[in-house]
Length: 249
Ligand SMILES: [Zn+2]
Image: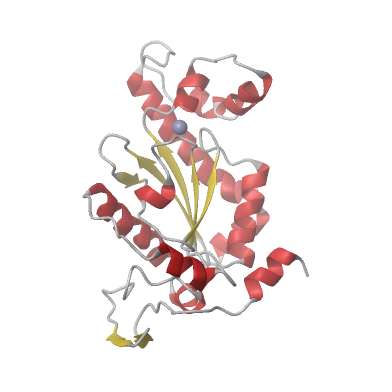
């Protein structure tokens, strides 16, 4: 068995975060959870029991709730070193996020998540490369994550570069070519230019929708997980001016 698989099968350490309709012990404190409470303690490490008990919809809701905290200045201040210790032997994140490399759109920050909570893959323009599809196959099929979020953002330099057909170097051009289908599929009003802000933001949304579709169109593993209801794939756009994430329908 591969090392990655071994890692996914190991037993958890430390405190456990329980979800759902159950009476649970978290540390030394007892909690009776109700349907309206998804996480008893947002700072408790997200361990195997929590992952097993959570649904794809709840996994997305954790991110919705986290962005609500971030965008209102209410981000948690957790014991990151404690979470590091608790998750060192095994990780059981609840979601995967594909995001742009933009320095302003770090998923752990904008979704206010902690050590061991989410898998993150980042590439300029949040395009679903073969390597990223493979990474998310591992994250879901092997490691048990319940949701995949493709997170685009406004004022994206990669999208602007694709719109402008920027020619900087062979590798960057190849990357921007991955966004070209979204540019071509987006209705154009006015000139094709990064100065056409409305068009740039429309392309960013199309690009996210294409990446969401690619998860199941280009991965048989993810397609099966989605069709059986084990995993949910959703698109979202992050506004770098307000800090708010809007999930696409
Ligand atoms: Zn970007």
